Length: 328
Image (cartoon, rainbow, N blue to C red; front, side):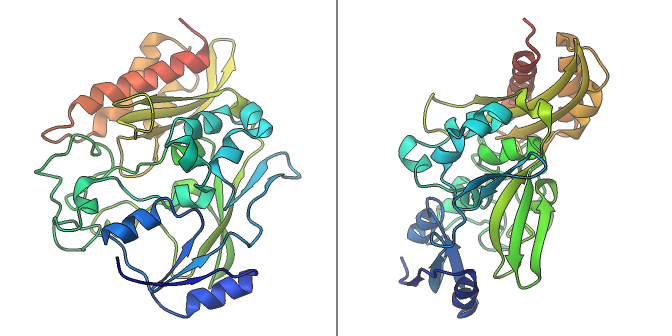
């Protein structure tokens, strides 16, 4: 691992000054993903700027009834916060389904948003990988691609986004607060991640020096009626092969509105717009759930080892809808 400098600023201005010392400086909080990549040689940096002392470690009620989650709030604290469990249960469930208790005690909100893929070829440091070395190719397309994406892929990359928490945040219409050279701005999470297309190395809209400060959740009352379903190889400390975060607004057994996001099957936390459109205004039945899943997966592209994900994703989504709709 290449040696690097380390700074722990106590003010935001100091953090920006520290970040500006080098064009190859990286922010760090928990470091559960970044440190792995530095050790593997997948990423390199001249200096890490530790943001733990900047006061972004609070969960606060918003005046309109939503919730503001600081960028350095630990996953454990967020998952067990009584407001999250009551008003946004899908978020608590998603966090607790991921990693291990030890990692959740260290991992942070912003760190999850910036989590990078678990693709074998990206992490081995030597295989062709357009995400790691743009223009070098994608070894996964014709390689071992069992864990890889079937939605949002391109000829340049088929790597999945690994986070559970971010899938729930997409279903909850989260807003990401960012500070940087352009001042302060807020970005819907649906606009935060960039499609892979021709440059999979660029994963999100952050510019050099940008710092995520918080995530805000809206005061949508029916988000309390939400659920996270995860299918994986084993019961603990495993990434999703397929997952579904679902929130449903029911009028009797009629679906007035809904939010659906999929994980483990796409190149980013995947908002299931086609499935949502098929559900709105219809009765919550097995047949309608199946039709919604089929509509969303119509655009799926499979590879030599991951065609099973189409059925697994359908089952995951239907199971989540059954659970949140309380039908047998």
